[in-house]
Length: 592
Image 1 (cartoon, one colour):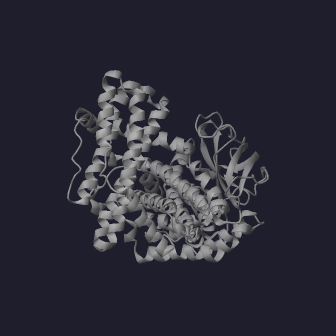
Image 2: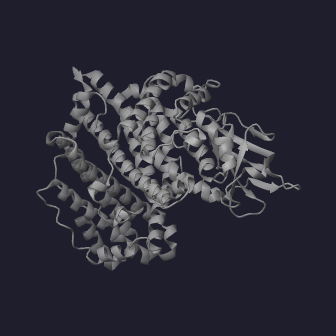
Image 3: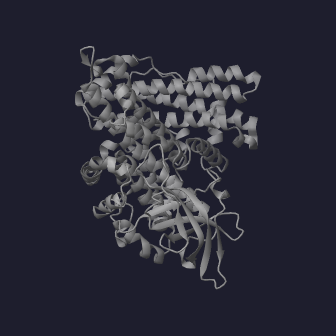
């Protein structure tokens, strides 16, 4: 029965979900809370006091701090016990990532090591490879990096020129090429390197040890942010890679790269929540301390607006990230129950939700950018000084819109993947879209006495606003749809906005089981503002899309339908935001 009620990746657009099927952060168990506290305690003891030293890239410091995390088991949360790890389910791992996401450039190094550095070997390696490398990566004795990007290749990873040629004796691949923007490149002992064997059209992957002859690197890159993260160009000059260090099968490298990136995207969405909560802490602390015109600036409405929006965007991101993480976890466990091996279960379990992973990466990284930007604004002139903590937060945030595939690539990927699922009949996307298109002039009534039913009806209308676009868009562009990037990004923006809004509605409804009616009123305020803002944003995106592809005879009808569907209950958003801000100001930290 469970399999029938759990939504497939992307299926949220055409189906409602039972609130009891959704996981919310308030449900984390005591063991997960203990792991989270360990991560927070580690940051307080080892990272926050050393942020300036980290940013100056003091020789050996980052590797030392990563090893300390390994000694506490924080590098082994994804790794089975047989390889020296402390294997946890997907949700606790995501919560730990969130906590560690407050660690600025240290979190970048740690996530690169535990994610894209270690997981290709854990998930695609054979038993000999895993036994040789994973225990040392789990303990922090050895560090890992992921070498995909090349000069000139950028987002088109498969166009890379790094080449591997089998030696005459058949014992080695001779590796030649160059990689750039390699996180942990300056100290990583183990590198997953992507290259083409002979004249192959697709990549293969290799496990390369930095100590091998022919591996060299440029000095550290000078970067806008995440200054403490080691970022190097790495060169491979006739490096002899033993044939047993081919990772996976020949030609499987591109698939390995894509699947690891899916995982990296959803994990990044969790880490930015941690970064946002820390930026909010600094924002409200300063707003409470800073006096202007005889009172704390936290008392001014313009500042309350900023504080409230920081909370709303962070709360919505968190709601959506853990909703999708629970779906991924259930999918992984179901595959394992069917006998799928550990690595493949994790790979496929995440890949099935590639749409949600891409959407959450974009939504979360842009939410964090908003939060840190307003943090600087709340600090005013002091925010522009490198002496304040928001300077680092602002600069470090910017890379998240580029990491794990740019936000533009992820927007396009999400819509492309959705349409392909529909064409493969993974679920009845096009049938539902045609049904919605044929009734586009019929918006569901949203005036309900029950707030939950009112919000659910609003969300269904917003989903319909997306669905009515699909038949006309498909007819207008056909196979050239991929060339219409502006329209695809309009659709992607609408998808992530409605997913975040629905996730937050479901979270607040489920919180009724855990909180008193009075406590819930503040979360209703969060929802009121979020849905109000979502409807406005979706109307703009929908209108832009319609005027870009709808034929003249249909255009006005579709614009009228979009206007009717993208409506939300009229609420006093000013007072709602003030109540949210007042709670934050009273607590002086993020407590939502």
